[in-house]
Image (cartoon, rainbow, N blue to C red):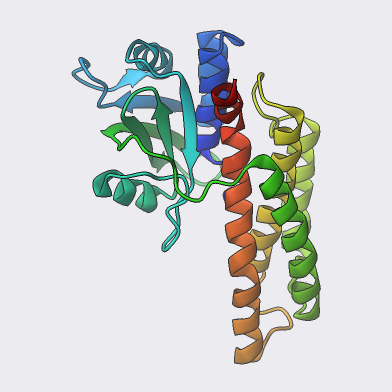
Length: 260
């Protein structure tokens, strides 16, 4: 499930910090979220991993003026610009952050420890060189919003026909958790983002949740091989549209600043 990627939190709150809209401590706490700790490894002039507050300051000193999100998938290098080593690491993690103003990017490595119900999650962001070039396949906010509305209509028709639109107790639990998070404001973007970005992000999260529930709902009514293939065929482009919209929303603060 990608509806709240760690790269999105890092980019959103990092951008708010770089714009002077939040304090370093507030940015770091918001990026960590429900995880136990985040560290950053590979920064120039740092012998080992450092905390987020120090790392964000180091990135600013390197000339970083903004942070973009990449959410690549096999055959779709969404938000990436190279080189191959960085792209491969980002593809393995299924997400990354690419700096603006300095040729570096950050790829998360997530480690979990502890029993079920008391899992300790730590994240190490690895700093790697990137190629300074336009990111791949990132739409504008208006394009993303239009694509999402169309994809949601088409997917609802197909998935309902296949009886995998997301029903039953597992789906209800996931939807209830999503609504609770939304009501608590946990899925809102950081200060400095346009209202349209918040709207696009919310719709993209809803579509991504729908896709995830459909993948996780078992066979449902789609018992025939042809129907299962139709389900996968319906979900694939919708998932791609949702990821494009997530990237567009998280990157919109940087795009707005670059337009002046």
